[in-house]
Image (cartoon, rainbow, N blue to C red; front, side):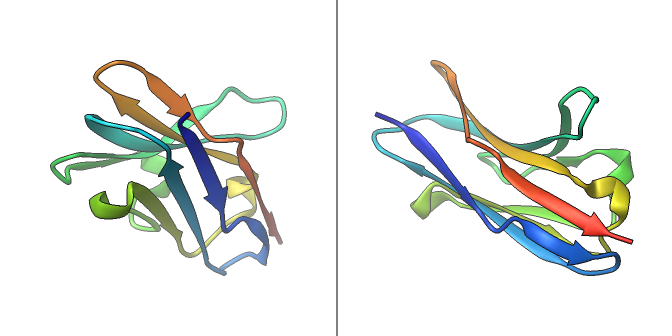
Length: 115
């Protein structure tokens, strides 16, 4: 059974940094891309960053230049380095893994940025 185990969330002051990790455990094959989404209270879930199996990346405009997505294919793990955090980055962050057959979601990790 595939599980996505997220870690790295927490409370940080504005201007600070956090690094999120998401490890896919179990039998998972043919990963096409790995994404980070976030959902703030009262708002829709939005795509923050994505990385393909070939290493191509895509970012939401609101995080360009501040966040960096990366992956370790050998470990089936995706990371999100978040720098220069702002209060508006406060949300629950979810990772998603897309394969040829289906997609999987993590349980979410809370990121809170205080002003």
